[in-house]
Length: 397
Image 1 (tube, rainbow, N blue to C red):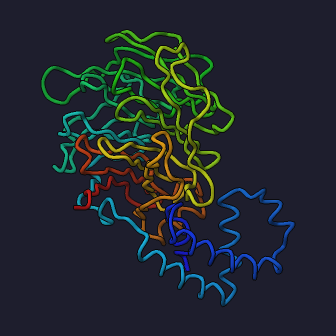
Image 2: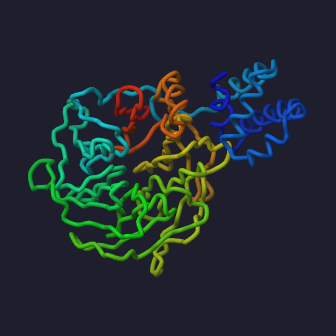
């Protein structure tokens, strides 16, 4: 019965499979609601996850649950699309990996290395992709100014690395040495301001000289222009829509035309469109929002656009599926279907539940990133009660 929520929600919003699934849901809804405590439902204010959990709790006590689940599993049998393998083919873990609460991940543009932001370790560890668990380089030390690094991003040419330091309220920029993967420990530039309140996300645009910062607890996104090693002190654009509550992660689309931002506090993801020749750079209001009960997002953490195909992934720090895949609408290139077309459950259920009892917002997936060719997905899993790890999944052939 633990699969209840994961069986009703991962259906597309099109076709007979969605209709059948929600007809079944409507049947249970109608037959059971007369016995519900409506004051409790109103108190939830129909917040998606509290509401979903309330439904689950009630259904567990009824025989109708079994009937509904049977139907849901039947629907799921011909509705699930598998874009990536369900089981990881490679894992970075162990004491030798020097992982320490991995929160952010990024592949180098050439795909040879993967970098991990270790929040509790105040370090960035670099690994040869599909190589040893032992890092080939570690960016660490007082001169780095790293303080709870939460997200990282490589410049398009791979020469620079940007780090969002949540507790330091600063974005630090590092330059790579000419040979190898090592970076200078001293940042060549710093982006900070007394108004910052938890810089938790950072992303370089792939198409122009701008960099976006997620000012998490100020509920805003700041976009700065730069020329080589010089970054402007004042943002060129500030996005502060009322729908944004804790900007936890952000990324640009491969063509740079859209900026996706996870809204941790209200379980959604917002998308802003680039406005050419506009002073504000991006639309002040989101052109699309992935949200609602069928989106199956619980404290979303990070997102990543596939480099060549029309879908993206969003991780849920709250443990609901860990990572969900969302397909772009066929008729509207600015929008994504709210129902995930695939979900990856990475943490074992017993471990996820054990963490959830103590840290309900920390029992799922964190940083996510596709390899440059899009054939591999990397996912950070900081295990609060066990071993930190990075899982890699292959694209399904």
